Image (cartoon, rainbow, N blue to C red; front, side, top):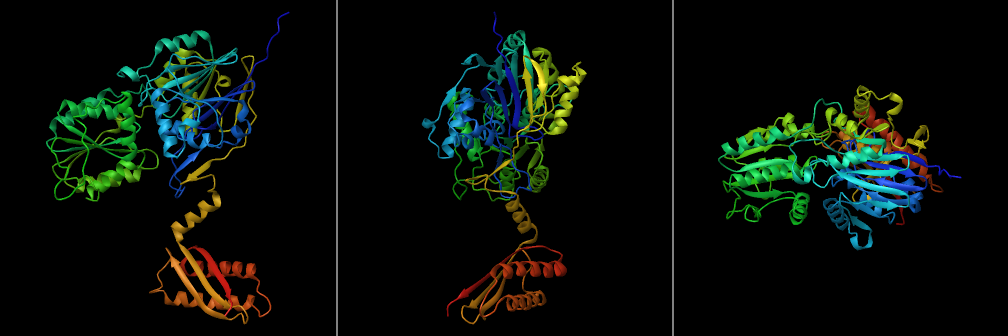
Length: 561
């Protein structure tokens, strides 16, 4: 008799659905858990003071013994940025390509973590990793950073493929090229479910960068003085393009941005960036002896999100310690606005024009994001021929656009899986059987060294302070007589000046004295009721007079005189 082993597969996300970033996907095969990426998300403006948002690891912490490993697709922070926080909670193996793991090691070191204590494994595209009867393989993809790979979890029911971010840019060379042969091999084995990125799904055609080089070449050929170029630090492909042009036109290269300098050091050391030592210049401080104004200099202002624009702003205002933009400079803005920094980008460009320099804002059509457009998605589906398509990595509208692409290719809507973070889809013997199970999850906010200790209440308070300011009411009482011996003192921060608003502050003084008189007797002080009454009554008075709601902090204490 032949024993049929029942295989249950679950696929779900702890981050990455209905959002850009925070990518973390789970493939469970029976009792084995495979983690695909562990990234962060950059905070939106309403998350005041928050440095990053990471996935909720509660489910993984509860099931640490079942985790086989964390498998990383590439080195962008949206895919590896949460690794330090995850490894601080559990000791599990991490697998990634050479550059990806070097960036992980750098991130761990920056967090003060000893990399020797963790199980960090560098893999090649050709490696096959076995976990009992489950195999994990990889194939190389084209993205803006080299050593990007798709991750394949091989099961008896078929392969679960996670492409992560990719394009089929035919101009890609060397380390950036897609391995079509490996994709063909995976397809022949049979793909059960394809987890494919969706961020650019609504854009028609293929994503390509071929024409950008010609535009930059034109700018370089006409530039007479320094060239200052803004670039996102995550886009090593474009950075290499600018460096190649600098070499072609016999210019020196200087890079501004702490994180970028570390990334460059790692990439040059591993051979992923080609910069002759003679071309790379170490900038000195601007002073009476050195103004860093060499006419053959190319300055790369790099970083993530706001950082390139902040650097350009400092240079334009002559506040940067290294470079001041002059009329003889050519400034290339090659950082298209991303959601959340459109206003910052527009203000920066306006400021650049005020410097009198030659400003070139590269058309965003020449700066496509290195993400799959609709035809890229169709080609990946055609090559892999999956039974089920699961759009991932994008806002909800992007997931729907990806689903429509699959429908156009003849997929039944029942074979297209749209999930929210925490939703679980189940397969048994290769058939979809469960679409209703859910894991409760929350977003975790990182603020400095604190992880998860910032909640909605704290954010609300920060919002109030940023909008309406803060009022501190201080009064000291005689412990024996309960009389006010000092104060009340009204301290305002970010609210209204006392000068010019004397009437308001007089009303506050009278109100505080009356409330203290009501709640304080020689025998007993209702401290909780007193502080709450001060907050309520002061809040009402201030709103009636100013239509603003500052945070109110009453400090009333007794002193033994």
